[in-house]
Image (cartoon, rainbow, N blue to C red; front, side):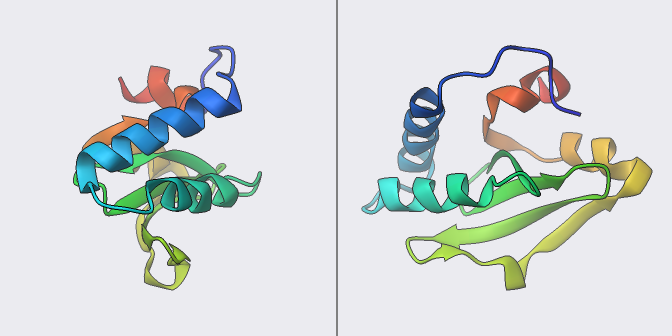
Amino acid sequence: MASSVPPAANTEIFDRLCAAIAREQGGADVYLKAAHLIRRNNGAYSLVGLEEGGERAVYHYEGVFASVMPFDEDGVRQHEAETLARNEDVREGLTAVEYAWVHPAYRDLLD
């Protein structure tokens, strides 16, 4: 599902994610929150984006499901994840979300 656009530098992605979290949530610990989101982008899960409002992040487990998970300065709360879609409905589930920020790898799909 990821796009064919060349990957942006990791620092640029982190900076833009931080800016989106700051814009949506304000407050402190923006860098820590972004670091937790990026850390979860680990090969098994791909970070798709930040949901409008900035309280939850959308992740895609390639070919299997998409979910949205709350996060804060303590980490991503996987135990509170909400499944958006499974299997062949994943694309539809991802496009139904209102995003505040989209990872460059998913922009072609979601824009």
